[in-house]
Length: 317
Image 1 (tube, rainbow, N blue to C red):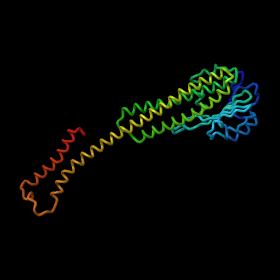
Image 2 (image 1 turned 90 degrees about the horizontal axis):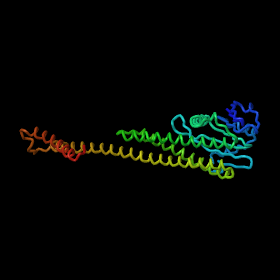
Image 3 (image 1 turned 120 degrees about the vertical axis):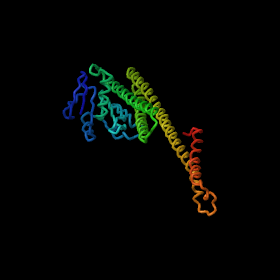
Image 4 (image 1 turned 45 degrees about the vertical axis):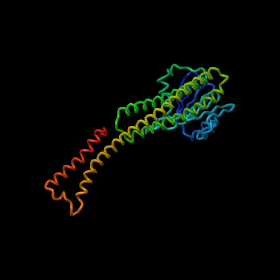
């Protein structure tokens, strides 16, 4: 699907590239949603774009994610999106600016999330753009808000888990797995956010002569710094949560060891006595006692009860 935002603030949707009449002077933005890599060559020729940045998305160097040439600016980065198993997955976003047109390539999942966020926060239908710069910076702001939204979502999950942990006395392996899942999602957001911040820093230098754009990018960077702080808070809370659960698990294990120790001591004394009288010696004077059997039974019972009384006074149970 292809979505085109025209300079008269008209938005049209096309299913095929062939349907588009490309008139650069009338267009602010073109969004390619759920595009195929096999279409890139056609897109490149149709709109005269250099799409070499698509082959550099795996590179670590920032120079592969921010490519500025005399006639084109290319940005490519990943943004976290939920997968079916509640883990985040990295979704690619490509933004190119050429001929005063913003070209955006993104997956349908991210496009849907950004659209929902735009409708929730902004009155987009009544928002008009006079220049492609305004629309481009608006898109940057929506992505920043998206980061804030998913970080808030992760923070809420961590708080809920913390509250449940404080109330619960029993823990399962699933709890630790869930903490690992939250940590992974938080880490993925931090890596993506760091990459996006580096791109905006380079973008800020590029637009230093355009005051309004420069100020707006600076504001977005400040917001992203606050979001990064919240990400660190999330890591700290997860560390505390993990330590809290491990401490409670150790306490439960200590209780089990105490019970096992009490049982072992209580049983060992009667076992020792019974073992002595189970020896096959001829000369054992107690064998001729009339009350020998009930006396030994009583001794066995007392040898079991006295350790219980001792451990009870020590408050082991």
